[in-house]
Image 1 (cartoon, helix red, strand yellow):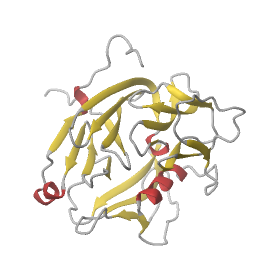
Image 2 (cartoon, helix red, strand yellow):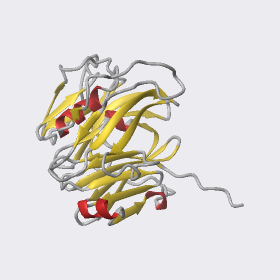
Image 3 (spheres, helix red, strand yellow):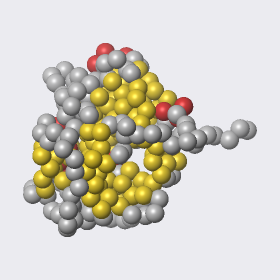
Image 4 (cartoon, helix red, strand yellow):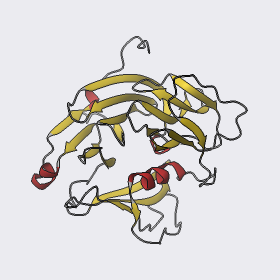
Length: 269
């Protein structure tokens, strides 16, 4: 029997006001790839390959889909937060060893940072078209502050007051009522529930209320700016219109495992 090939783990970031989806592909344990997709034309832009770790739950894409704030850990085990122009990771803003890190865009012209406060200086350039300021609503030690800030901005609401209690460190640990978002009337509700920190990461359960089997085995899911539904599966990204959801078949699918790191590093603009 031929060996089963390893499939990439994939995370998605959707621009709030532009037809852009950012794909963060973990090709291997410490090899990441940044890709952007036009959600209307389905044009694909490959960007940086990065040796280290990109923390998708601490990252976000700007409303216009042109910039990304991210938290990273390099091959030398050093961490930093940065702001880049997609699909490249070249930092326009760079902060070494933040306490937690990352951030989210609370508006078209406002980036809220998380855990950058102890840095003596933020290095930036003149072509950053938004303000950068600390998120004062959340404690810098809250490791889920960025993802929950994104949920609130995108219109997710709490499905209940219960956030659960920790039970173990090797299995789902929280009974969280979760968050839900229905982008418009007549659309199903995407529900996201925190399950705890185990297997070296923060884990969430994702469901689509009227399509219980659609997200089985999926890594992540989100709505884009045009109310299309995007699903990340191992090695695969899929787009569903509302009609596609009713049929149960995506109208667009991208096998990200077809992408390979070039022998020589790409020159970033």
